[in-house]
Image (cartoon, rainbow, N blue to C red; front, side, top):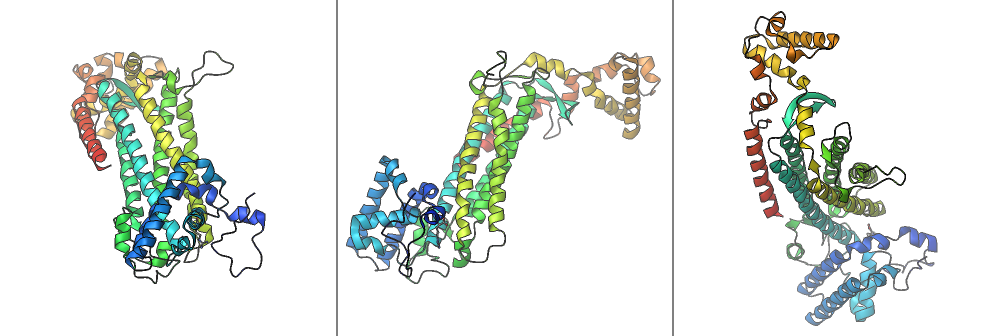
Length: 469
Ligand code: ARG
């Protein structure tokens, strides 16, 4: 149990120190120590701003910066030292360390600022880095999907809706669908980055600092594109964290859907893919088992990502204006959501890259005639039959075949003509997986050349994304 340290950030108006359990309860240092690099950068920028405003002399500034750098180095080289501090939070930690190193000069740094604008600044910087890191991982996942799609171009598979055979598609078309989906996640992550990209420092506790600091210069030094425009909202809103958690929640939902496909495709019933040993685990009792745990865990973890979004939304809902201590609850679940989403994305990219397909099995599954029923209806439409009637006619053919335990593609032309005189002997040439695929050359469709062009386009957009990272 940590006792409140002697050097306090507040306490002048208190008769008694905080009760030990309560001190521990309200501390955030055990988790916000993760913000230390951002805190120290913000401290340096603030020290320079105070010097520019003639509140610190050049000599004091130099001492202060040197001490801040020392703290940074010690924290890097000795994590146990960091963890052992009884500081209330990361802001308190730096102040304690500064005072230890430069005495009363250390007590000058907090001039004109508050933990309220500091924590908002640190947390925004964290979210910006986090969003960029996740975007990099998402780009690698898109690349892995495209590489597999390019490699197997031309292999058909059954396309499903409602988990029932629907129409044939290319395996590459399937993989490209996930690539496009994850590219859209990159867009949402970029939006979260921009939402965090305004510097609150100088907002003070709520009303703005009373010292003539150059907020734009501070923002520039800290890598922000601009400054927040209202000190009250700057210190009490966490929209950037919500935006990031939303982007992560959608990403996690997408990962969980890819995971659902992969676990199904790896079953003996589907048999479309071979689970890579490197990303699978065995059973402690059943020697034959190879389980898709990487995908199951990805799917399972998706829940806690959206839970983090709802946790923060619930914390923020109904809060009065201005900083409230409730806001301290913004960090832990976001850190966890970030760590988990990043790991999930990286593992998914590795597993996709290592997954082999069973091409013969895919071709065999794609040869189910049921997948061509729409083609028969389209054939009739091409011969002038209104689609709804064509649908009815093909439905009747399928029903009769099913009732008699026959395969309708084997029906003779004469028998087919009894359902519709529009049938001719060119039907069977029309009724192949290849022609079903080839007819879908509309942009975004599954025809071979269309998919080839789509993969190229997607690669190009991925390249632009990687350049922008
Ligand atoms: N640890 C606090 C947090 O994470 C820092 C801000 C504290 N501000 C205050 N007025 N008590 O939100």
